[in-house]
Image 1: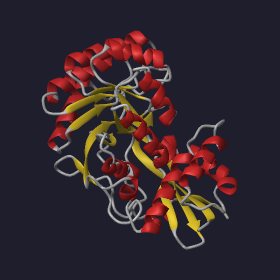
Image 2: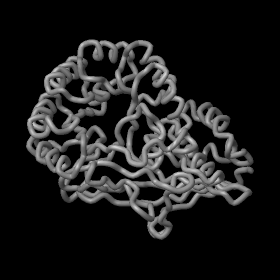
Image 3: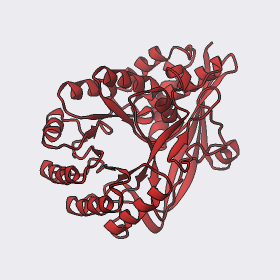
Amino acid sequence: MEITAVEIDEFAFEQEDVGIRPDGESVYDPGETAEGTSFVLSIHTDEGVTGRYRGQIFGALTIPQIEHVAENFLLGRDPLNRESIWFDLRRALRHTGHLGIGPVDVALWDLAGKQYGESVATLLGGRMRERVPAYASTTSGNPEHDTPSTYADFARECRDRGYPAFKIHPLGDADRDIEVCRAVADAVGDEMDLMLDPSSCYRRYSEALEVGRVLDELDFAWYEDPLRDTGDSAYAMRRLTEELDTPILGLEHSRTEPFGAVDHLFEDALDLVRVDAHLGGGLTGAMKTVHTVQSAGMDLEPHLGGAAHLHLLSAVPNAGYFEHGLVHPELGFEWTNNVGYEEPIEVVDDDGMVAVPEGPGLGVDIDWDYVEANRTRRIVVE
């Protein structure tokens, strides 16, 4: 089997009442409209088997990388040789970041599943779970519209919808974030796992420490990537881990995958490891991280939603929650999670669970009518 063509169908979508905070975070902003770019990647073969991936995030930045590697590193290759392709792409993109690896790799896993007539979860090791628990992952806060009471009321709503856990993407100021965390803990702290993800917004270590000590008091489940250095500094992360009782989750923004996980685990620099098939290195890179973290006896958490992470969570025993977001009381619970699919794949049931797609490969079908109606360009490398 050989790869004969790589096709990228780029399409646009809009997010009403969404604006961009000065630090780049998407927030609720009535009257504003944010424009997004996504894509469907199709990898075609001479045997008629096609693997696909719908872009999850940062489509405009990812597409050029896929186009860059398609001719020299994909055409003519056996698509089942994912390991060899993964290392070639990692080197090819070493100077520019690795956004293009994830979509290509996940599409190749989808292709392999279709070739063998098995779900990706089965190929990853087995479908141990048919449903996985989800947490409500909020948008980052907009100080003009979001208050501690807004977060607290929304946490109650998420609890009533069945979510077992609630993650706060906060306002970005340490003092105000502490108020938000206290309000949410008072509202649902005895009934839900609570997490805080400042998304690397705190400029000073002392701020991160101050917030972390409050999370200790409130018994939060984890504290995620608080430091402005994005967690690259194993020294700073180790200091924070030593100072606080709340488990530290890290490496979402570092993009070092299994290699950074090894370094941080050996330095006792975190308690939980982020893994990302979309932005980091596909499912091949994710499984390398999974096995690295397993070998250290530790746990990990997938970043972002998507079909790939549902299959990963089904097959991996040391991964916990599915991230369902971004959610907001005024924006709803779906946003763009299911855009471009024939059937919604991120549907949280009354027990706070999301079903793992069935069928060969990723088990999802692209809504080609929607993609074609909103297509902005088509790239074909053959």
